[in-house]
Length: 418
Ligand code: EPZ
Image (tube, rainbow, N blue to C red):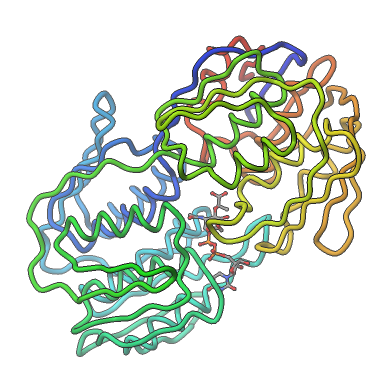
């Protein structure tokens, strides 16, 4: 099993090019089932993307990867395809459940493995199934699989999500795309990644209109034959490196982004006293001597993202006083806390809130990654800790961070994969 070895307390400085968003690429790859000929550019070549490609190939989509140009070409000219998403491919990558909507709306049936839980929570899909049933699907759960049928096709309707879900919004959009008539989705997730899927579906010829958390979809009649799409940048990767710069950056420039998307995160960092300068497509961040404590509560976009909770917690360990971070989205997303405490962090958890006392000196240790974002918080802690930190089970990291150690090494961090 590979590990990351980090020698702490080395200032980082330089520029970091942010990759495409994993969480925008996954639903757009699923949408390739609806299309005929797609060239997807700027997708991050990380494990989850290759797992989704494997699933789509299993279903019957022809996929070619042009690494140099960072293109993924997807061709689907088949009248009938394999409408099965097997457990072995969905269990490791929950977003595999996003093929359900496209298969159902185009091929009128689907058999998709229930994704099962992961380290951060049980990850149910009841909201996905709620929306598909409203569109007229017949859904059964049998032997751990979702068996969905829509013999007469899906019919547009009004749907109000009882709670906000990124994946359920995406599955409903993908299903409404091929439904007859208009679908009005209320209480939708409007993360930038969801909006990137919307812009992709519009390129395919679908009429979609967004008002706040309401999304109106006109079922498509004629699909455009051939389209190209460049995936939006990864705001969670960018936020991760913003924290790295705030922790130990002499001067770190984050490129290839659209800073308007980061208003919440930038305001929080500025409130902590982090020195930040934003341009339209780049952000410069400099380490700050004294960091002020802060209280954060994770919320759906445009609120503070749960995917940056673990990273900001490391920053809080260096802030003066008692900071609080409330995790409202997932039931078990504090797995990084015991590992950070082994490095000397002073953190207590009480009913979904982590109380972080700082500033505390962190010392290097051998730690274990548990989920994608928890793992990267251990890397951030390693950058500022005394001595050396070894992060185990970094396959979690490889699911969602493209070229992590080379991007940090380019900024003079002492980090290597062993
Ligand atoms: C997406 O997961 C992201 N993954 C997650 O990123 C991200 O943390 C999450 O959205 C929240 O922003 C991808 O886009 C591939 P949800 P998703 O449905 O869609 C509950 C990462 O690190 N819920 O918005 O699964 C659910 O349990 C990953 O890149 C139901 O109850 O998240 C959670 O408590 C981690 N029923 C809350 O809603 C459902 O049917 C939000 O989940 C669906 C979700």
